[in-house]
Structure formats: C-alpha cells, structure tokens
Amino acid sequence: MKTSILALAAFLASSCSAFAPHTPIGAPRSLSKQSTLVMKDFPKPNLEDTDNYRNFEKLSSSFRTTLKATDGEKKKVAIIGGGLSGLACAKYLTDAGHEPTIYEARDVLGGKVSAWQDEDGDWIETGLHIFFGAYPNMMNLFAELDIHDRLQWKIHQMIFAMQELPGEFTTFDFIPGIPAPFNFGLAILMNQKMLTLAEKIQTAPPLIPMLIEGQPFIDAQDELSVTEFMRKYGMPERINEEVFIAMAKALDFIDPDKLSMTVVLTAMNRFLNESNGLQMAFLDGNQPERLCTPMKDHIEARGGKVVMSSPIKQIVTNDDGTVQHLELRTGEKVVADEYVSAMPVDIVKRMVPKKWQNMPYFRQFDELEGIPVINLHMWFDRKLKAVDHLCFSRSPLLSVYADMSVTCKEYKDEDASMLELVFAPCSPLAGGNVNWISKTDEEIIDATMGELSRLFPTEIANDPKWAATSNQGPDGKATLRKYTVVKVPRSVYAAIPGRNKYRPSQTTPIPHFTMAGDWTTQKFLGSMEGAVLGGKLAAEVIANRAKGNADQPIKEIQQHIKDEAAAYEAHEPSGVKGEGAIAFGGGATLTKNNEELLREVDPSQFVAAK
Image: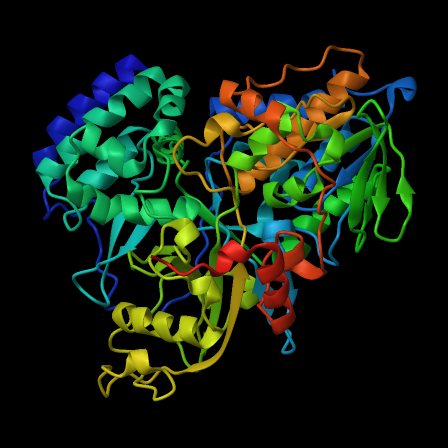
C-alpha cells in the first residue's frame, strides 16, 4: 500500500502539466448543449477483483458450507422487519439451512427502499437509490440471486451542476484501464472547472494517513465533522464549497459541518482502493419487484416465510429477561428458537422491553436517531435536457437528482421527463435552517421549482402557479404536470460526529436475540450496502451459535452509558402507534392523519429552526 501511495504522489506531480486543459484524452465535457439523449447502459464492471468482494464472497459461501446446519442444528428464527436488512438476514439463514420467518408490519417489503404505485400506476419510491461498484455485499447478493442484469451501469464519472454557471455541468471522468488510486487522482486533475491546481494539491496530504493506516485512522476521525477535519489539516475552504457539501448531502442528507468525517473517509477509502468503486448503477425498475421479490422468492424456496401486514405489538420477556415470545397486534404469539430485530433504531427504542432498559447495550441507542429527508417525484409536460446519470445538484436545497425517464428502463419516457430529487437538509434535526418537514407539499415544490430554474434556466417555464419561477424568461416552456412529495421523518441514522461508538454489535446481552440493521456496527455505515451487511452479520451470529460455537463478543460500551443505565428509570415501552409507513419508520406522503400521528410520536419534527 505504501508503495502505491508514493507512486500515486509521483503520478499526480508528473500529471499536472501532462494533462492540461487542451488535452483531448478524457477532457471534461460541457453537458449544457446536449439536446437529445438515448439511454445507454454500460457493461458490468469488474467488481469481483477486490479484497472486499472476495472476503464477503467467502462469508456468503460459509453459510452453505462451514455454517450449514445439520438436521439437529436447524433453528426457527423470527425476524422483525422486512427491509433490506431483515431480508438479507433471512436469505443467508435459509442458505445455512435454518427456517426464518419475517414479520413485516406493512403491506410492502423494502423498508427504506420500499415503493408503491399511485392512482395513475406510477411508482413512488421512498428514496433515490444508487448502487456503487464499492458495494461488495450488494454485488455478491445480485450474483447469488442471478439478477445482475437488473442493474443499469452508467458511464464511470461523477456529474456536478455548476453553481456559477446555471444550466452547465462539469464531470470527474474515470479513464478505463487506469487502476485505483490513479484513476481517482487523474479524474480530479483533469477537471479544470471546480478546483485550482493548488487546491487539488492541498487536498491530497490529509488523505494520505487514510491510505496508509486504513480503518483505524478512519474510525478515529469520527469525533470530527467534515468541516473540522478540513480546518485541522489546512484544506482550502473552497473544497468544502465545491465538493464536500455535495458529498455530505448525498451520503447522509446533512451539511459537512454536521457530518462525521468518518463517513466521507469511508467512502473515499473504497473509491481510492477499488478501480470501479465509484461506478454507479440504477436498478432497472421499482425496488419491491426488481430487488425485494427475488430475495423473498429465494427465502421461500428454501423453507423460509415472509408474512406481510403483521406488526409486532411487543417483545414479551420471561422473569430473567430472556424472550418468551413476540406478540402481534392480532394477539397471536410467535415462539421461535432465535429472534432478530431488523427494525430502524427509532422504532427499536419504542419496543425495548422494561427488563432490558437498564442494560447499557440498549441505553446506548439513545445516542442514535434517524435523519429526516424528503424525496420528490416531479413529472414535466416535455423532455428536459437531462443526463443519463446521477447528478450532484450543489444546490442549497437539493442533494442529488436523476431524470428517471432516461436512467431507468421501467420509467422510460421519450416525450417527457420525470425527475427524482433528494431534498436535503430538510430540517433543523439535519442542520437545515428551515423545517421543510413541517411545510406543505406546495411550499416544498415551489422552492424546488426555484432550484430547477437554475439547473434548467432556458427550459423551466414562468408558471404563475409557482412563484419561484417568476424570473424565468420566455424561452422556458416546461411546466410541472404532477408531483409527489415523500417525507421520511426518520431515515438512516444521523452520522453526526461521535456516533460510531454507540452503534451496537449484532450480538446482544439477551440470549437468542440478535440485532440487525444498517445502524448496527459494520463498516459501510447507513446505506443499502450497510443494511445488507448488517443482516448478513446477524445471520452469521445465529448460524455460528447453532453450530455450538461461542457467541461473538459484544462491542465495548462507553463508561458514561454504563453509569446512565444504572440510574435509568425503566418503564413499559410505548410501542408503535398507528399504521402505515410513517408509523414504522418509512416514508410516505404526509396526509392529515400521518401528520397528526407524527406530531404525537415525534414532535421534534415540527420544531422551528432557530
């Protein structure tokens, strides 16, 4: 590794003049004049030739070999939650010969990747989800389910809107055949629009310890925000404005002064060490049918079960604190050999039994909470000048967006655009200066139309319905014909500084009770990859235990949590109130009933920004 770092440094130094702005090879392209676009997918990159992929492939295969249960070792496992983590846990348990049953509270699978159809038959997604080459567990999963053909790989580049040049974009282009980390360095060097050469050079030294020391250095930066890390290491402020704001909002829906630097370094470490780590793919259709259903079919074909619309009322314990059974809202009792929580952290906190509440393991959950985010779907009456890729908007209100009518086969439309956009930060809880969660859909869409007027200055019409478009000129013709606002009050856990040490191990102090979820300890943080890995690690705990092996150790718990736990006044858990996605930690259009429920169970969502 040290040799490659020195080589990279020499390469960057020698490349400063070799790749001047006039150099034709991979020169950054202006996308502002693109008037027609045909969806073009690229071949699946080589994802398998990395240590991460091989290591997790080995873990996958262990469920079918060394962890495979004999007839006398098979366990009945009850899994609470049918999101990606619960589905992954059940998938690998069936591979190991066990009999899991997923109890999903809603009528749709996927959790935070769930989707549903509106009255017109259009799919509404909880979030805009992108698959990276640096997702080794997700890529292993696609291979194991034989659904790699459902990923639409895009050209290996990152696309940024130009703040100072409305309607124009710039790119980081990754040249085929150049390995990591050289391709990453070259992509940055070749871009002449976002950072000066001096700023690029100043960016490199703080990242060298990450490459040399690896994960220990990355984990040690969790106490620092991105902004604090930059200032500590003397990185120019413009790097924050040009790059880190966009990255922070894409990674965790918050600004860099609130985001732990560990999150950014984790992502960059993967991208700098894996040649195709940053290459992105879109799923070719809606997530429930194209991803969750193959997982469900795999589970059921091997003896597992997936039970829908079956919310858990409570976890019932014995006098010694062990699990007696799960009680459904119907009154049905679920008895199993093993139990798994694959619920979001904010829901788990409402379900922790009274007998567990003085245990430090469960008290550390108080330090974690989901971050609010808003996902928008906007249908226009004509085609916008789009790109067949994910775009980093670099907007004060928007994180990333994509024209799904050109990036996704199921949503393809040759005549009109459908933009899917991530609106973030959207709340004081996420560091925003406006509480958009409490705003009406119309207010949110009007603000977004103002941002789209900057991104598409010659195309968005001056529409009297949307005051933010009032400065648009006569050339703009595109009007909004339909929209949907999906609010997710508690999305992935908020990766603010200092939170990593509170993320629990999958092993818990309760016998035969295991924790899954992207918020549990695993190195891919809050993401689809993290959810799959969290579920996979939970399955490993159970499969290992079934073989008669000792449990994997519980992660060390902070002393102040131990002290607070002893003094905590335990009470009966509040449980989950209400029905639907909002009640169980998902996203939905906020109807009057949903809003009333949210005000009751999570009033902090409506606190005005200071």
